[in-house]
Amino acid sequence: MPQTDARRDLAAALRYTARLGMHEGIANHYSLAVSADGAEFLMNPYGRHWSQMRASDLLLLNANAAPAGRADVDPTAWAIHGAIHRKLPQARCIMHLHSKYATALACLKDPVLPPVDQNSMRFFNRVAVDDGFDGMGLGDEAERLATCLGNRSVLMMGQHGILVIGPSVAWCFDTIYYYERAAETYLTALATGRPLNIASDAVAEKTARQWEEYPGFADKHLAAVHSILAEQEPAYLD
Image 1: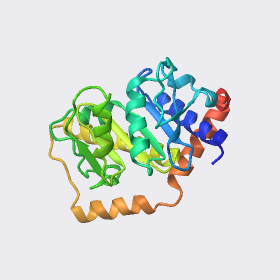
Image 2: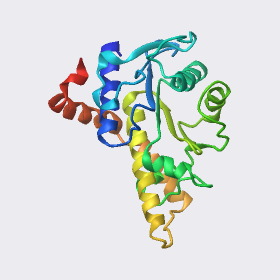
Image 3: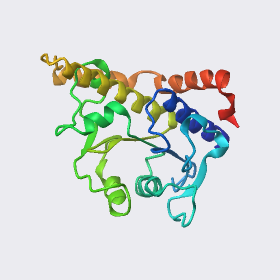
Image 4: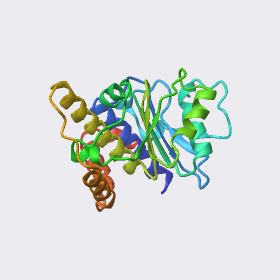
């Protein structure tokens, strides 16, 4: 993908995440590898609000070269995203949020999302859980997080938030969006105090596979976001 398109995809995802209220001020970060080995990556700069992100704002960084003394690079973002891009070449895109419902779920003693609806079934047996929170994502903590995913693409970060890795901005944005929706449904259902209707393993796995085989869904989702932003906030393209 040309870097211009990569920048526009990432800027669109950042802006739309802000529209959805899933961001946290100037915290949290999205990154996208642009080199074959995954070491060079784009990431949103420290202090720039997601709702104002432009394609040209995104930083080009290298996971093997610490950006010492740069005021535009968030230290925790560099530590976490740099470690994952360095250690996991399959992580072409990384999205990390402290979104409301995923983070609330991460605060529970058991942060596993049960298969209570078709959105939550999408993630059945496909989420890694980290229960070893040891402070903000700097140094050893960032390196540790990079090992927690195993062969999964979604990491529930206990007492912290959510992290998604995948092959593209479209794939990660669609995944993190639907995880937040699923967590919202689950926690809302819990709040009723009534018994949950949890699907069987067989139905949950069948539904998860149907999600995985659904044709072009993530790409169409991001294309729809581009269409909205191009009409209403075209400055993101700059």
